[in-house]
Length: 140
Image (cartoon, rainbow, N blue to C red):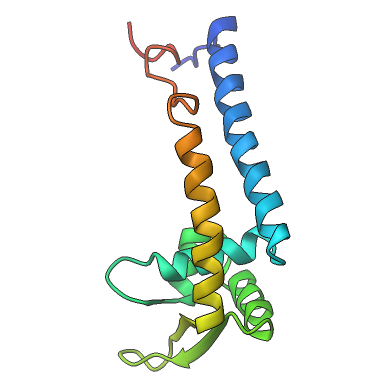
């Protein structure tokens, strides 16, 4: 099956979407550095805090959320642990797993940074637009 080459207009839609996404990512990088952590460290804390149904997550679950390798999350967690933002505990259900919990300091920090992100996202309402199937040439 031959692949359809995007039209100029479709390239413009994709370019604008990626531009808007990059603006938000850049904001996130800047704000996290103001709080003394990297964007990846913040994302790790966010995914622990935001894990559905509980106040902890496993290394494997965090690797999936961050779309990275298990050993990378182990290193990232070690750096956050040295900063006093989280701690590890042997799995309560599966003793082979490692559960990651936020410390009070990590919890406080993730709340501050998430609040700044929330305000930025609210300001992007109507600006950050996901292209429709029609705009991407996927509809007749």
